[in-house]
Image 1 (spheres, chains in turn brown, cyan):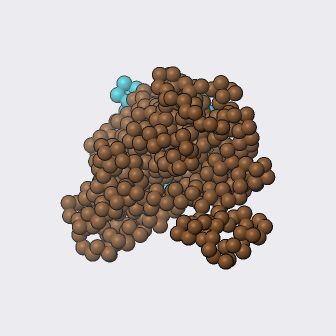
Image 2 (image 1 turned 90 degrees about the vertical axis):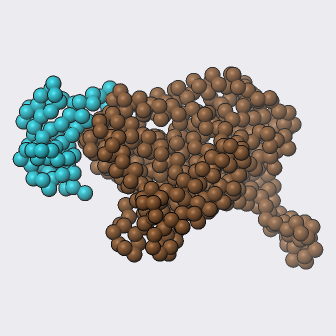
Length: 506
Length: 87
């Protein structure tokens, strides 16, 4: 918690501590109107919403507005935002490069050979996304990679787009919740003074129950909700099987991440291998990976175009059409609007934190609501959900709510493992359910580029973020498991039942 | 506890009012103040610490149960050791 006692840095509002929620509250209303009511899935539009919210909030500040501006800067420079941004950029470049190498066509071929029809595809996708996310520890990266790669393959064979997107997000939830190298797992353990290994082991009993129900739900819904198979031309033909060689690229990322390397290093190795495979096996030309589309009238361009190796990256075009292009470019650029949005949201969250909004919520919950252990645990679930609705980067939301979960849990001597599990499961789940959530928008950003990449992929196949939330089955089941666990005592442990091992800080 | 055993730890439906035996020594956070001194609340069970130092509020302590009524879920205990100072 920040120190708010210093008069020069105290952020006070007309209307009291609750008014510190105005920027985020304005944004949430904007997001609901834009995405939910009007059906406009435009991330850049949400940026306008949060910008206006920040301006409106400023007029409620008592005293110098400079303090408010400084708080915005403090929020935007937080490490959690940078972590999410790095995951998006690297995963975006990786997924796009694999895509340039025909991985999607290979998947369509594999689904055909293995006779995984449209009905089974969402359930299988959920399991595979869960495995990838658990391996690499980033649900965001998984949402991006699977939406860019597996989603079009599933739509092509006739799976319902909204169900398939829900299955991908569910897999991301599973991995964010369970992966030992996931940011949310680490934050949940460290903030509740529990060891990471013990936390991961203790959360199987919740995650598996939810996953079994989610898998069954995808099987059932897959049979009843199906789209129309699309004639995708050459995709799925015998010649397209070679694209599956990029399973090696994905394998390199998983193995490197599981061996404890940073996600930047792990995905970088994946990008390097995918580029090598594309070029050596002829899956994609160098200019499909990165290209300088320069004016053909320029003498330098003509000279460079004729140079071996370098010339492969220079593409002469008509003057006026000059641009940089290729999978590395489009993979990264697609996330620029989301990156700006996230920086502004964490700034607004910082306003609420420094303005006492979160503190007010905690006091209300502690004094009025959490009067028994069942109600305390239910409050922890609902409070985590509430904060995730406001701070849409789930790691940032988790960091904000963690001190309150610790205080509330200790008030009833609830064990650190149990507290960490309540905190992380609901953070992981809700971060992919709310239509303005970072994980959901990351997948959506990847999806928006598909109509440009595939002739057969129409705008009608793009899923509105506001329509997918009922289909994130694993997320919903995970929240339900914890609400039931709070009521029945399933998995509950007290401080006196089991001591946490020494906290391992990563 | 091995990692395999820890997979199944807590795999029960734990009561909201845990019971203690006289003489049990357990770790717990001191959670509040009552009329007769500090309190340790474990779930909805309440243990009074009549002789404890008031500065131990919010500290983690090792306590020994001195009396316990399973019907009312209340008891008394004494502080044996201070495990963590209050934050």
